[in-house]
Amino acid sequence: MAKIIFLDGSEIRGKVGGKVYSRNASGAFVRQYVKPVNANTSLQQAVRNNFASLSSAYRDLSDANRATYENMRTFYKTTDSVGNVVTPTAPQLFNRLNGVLLQNGEINLGGIMTTCPAPIPLVGIVNTTPTFVTGTTTLHTSVLFADGNFTVPAGQTLIVSATTAISAGIAKVPSKLFSRITAQVTGADTTSSNIASLYVAVFGTPVAGETIYMRFQTFSTATGQITSEVIAPMVVS
Image 1 (tube, helix red, strand yellow):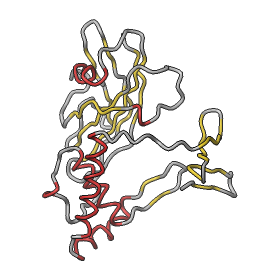
Image 2: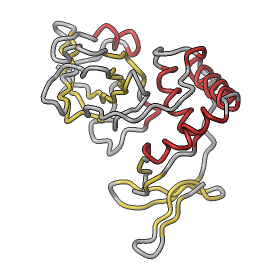
Image 3: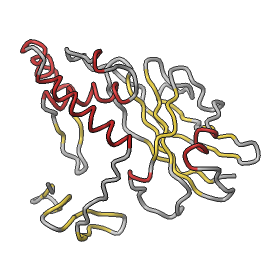
C-alpha cells in the first residue's frame, strides 16, 4: 500500500493500483508496477518457513507471555521510509526479534523468546572503508564502530553483504543486488579479518578497477535488535 503525505509537502510512496511512486536524486517519479519474479530460492523458502513458524508460535504463547510483547512494543519504535515513527504490534515485535535470532542461527524454533526482552543500547556503525586487493586476495571490511574501535562490539554480530561489480555512478543500490557474505562475531578485528574467499565463493574473483558495494549491519545476540545498515562502495585494487 502506498504512503501518501499531504499538507507539508505532498508526496506518494509505494504502490497504488498499477503504478509505483518513488523518488531518486532527480526527484519524485512514477513507474508501471511489474510483479517481481518469484525465484523461490532456498533462502527465500527458509525465510517464509521461519515466518510461518513464528506466527504459529506467537499464537501458542500464553496470555501472560503475549502481554510482555504488548507492554514492550512502545520501546521498539522504528522510523519508516518517509520519516514517520512506527510502533510495531505485539506479533510484529515477536516476529522481528525472534526472526533475526532465528535467521542468524542464534536460536532454533525450540528456543524462541517467549517473553519480550527489554531493549538494550547497541553500538552502531560510524563508517567503513572496505578494501579488496586482488594481488594478495584480501578483503578487509574495516568497520569503525561508535565506541571508537574496529572490532565487533561485545554481544553483537556484524552481518556483511555485498554485490557483484556494478556501475560506480548508481544513485541507490537495490537491496536485491546484495547477497550475504558472512557474519563477523564479537571481537573480530575488521581491519585484519580476511573474508575474500567468502566473497569469491559467492561472486567469483573481481577485477581491479571494478566497483563493489558492501552493506553492514549488526544485531544483538541477546535480544535480536538490529542497527541501521551502512552501505559503502569499494573500488577493487
